[in-house]
Image (tube, rainbow, N blue to C red; front, side):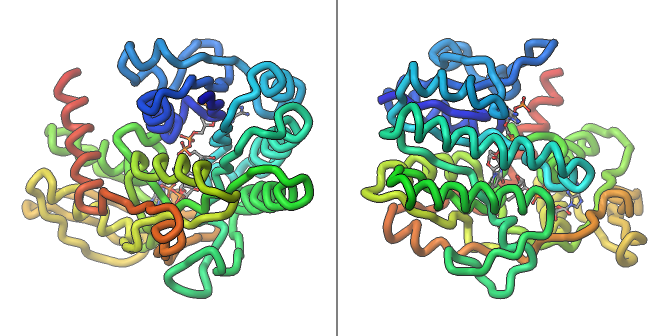
Length: 339
Ligand code: NAP
Ligand code: F7E
């Protein structure tokens, strides 16, 4: 079996490429060239794994490049993960978010349609489509009410996939995945920002952690479990859309509390909103809030109902909240200790 992964240098690409290689796939990755020639999370893979990934340099906004690759490789599966994935940034740069996430997805769909129609495609949609959801928990029937340029771009991607699937009888599936995190999560996402900050404070550094909306409620799982779900979607008899999450809700504040508890520290919260601070037992400021880190619109109150994925795909998240926080904090402490 042969698979192409766009966005292979991101968090999910790291876990998906290892999963596919372990199943005996020939794995091809699409990577944007940059002047430092760094390869994102690919650089973090063990050498014996990295050497088996075939890299094609290119950009998903380039349809000719994608058509050429699809024509030459004719993969059995394509996992379309590449995106401008940071919601906060999408408010500042909606145009480039749309160019990559809408234009890029359209290019992938067109390349499959014209050059390799037997390829099965996974599209990385998102729980952000639900905006401020009108029901809890959320499943495949919950209305989409996007509240950020990122979410709007992913809604366009999801509907492009649905339309191509129906109009041209292509095998294209949407994964409506809730937040999934890991030890290789980008450092600007809140979970990794917290795990790295707690590791630094544990090492004796004194800078407090500065965060935005502590009350945002998300459903956080472990990325390694979710890439298994992506693969299962493409092994299923028919193309379809699936919600995947843990079914648990937590606030950003809960994540902070849990992260500090991993290193045996307690956080006492005082104040509200932008005046809230988190103090240690010795009254040292561990956490502060900055208005600048709030988003113009928040999307939260998330909790996944993943019944369909469980019943039809046999998918189940293995790692839940506490274990996720622990593994991230411990990994960042280990990384600091080895510096
Ligand atoms: P990520 O770490 O931000 O990775 C995104 C990848 O896309 C990076 O490898 C990036 O390459 C690449 N990329 C961006 N623009 C590109 C372009 N124009 N051409 C080629 N490659 C480009 O994201 P992730 O967490 O792995 O998520 C994977 C996908 O799932 C994304 O589409 C994301 O929107 C979606 N998603 C994520 C979550 C989550 O919680 N992680 C939940 C739901 C959906 P560079 O390194 O060059 O920037
Ligand atoms: O924010 C709040 C922030 O940036 C989580 C992407 O993978 O998951 C991710 O999007 C929450 C938000 O992820 C800070 O307001 C507070 O409510 O880690 P995040 P996200 O926006 O949920 C979805 C499912 C995707 O599809 C996306 O691609 O945390 N928050 N303080 C903060 N967020 C950040 N980044 N930094 C803070 O200091």
